[in-house]
Length: 82
Image (cartoon, rainbow, N blue to C red; front, side, top):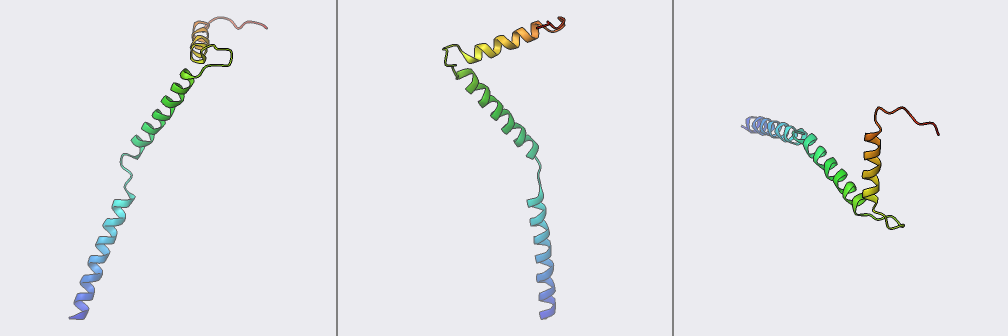
């Protein structure tokens, strides 16, 4: 009788432990959470850059946008010699 109860206990314990490990090891959706975190981080950095003002009083966001526009407009032009 004790042997049957011990065997049943060991079997149940084994199955519960295996199920528990399988549930903990799941990483479904982990990539989505990481991408959302990365997007939020980049959005926060961009908001901070746009909100900052340089010491000279010019808007840093406007300066960055202007430089990007100049770079995009200059695509295809031959490089200038300095």
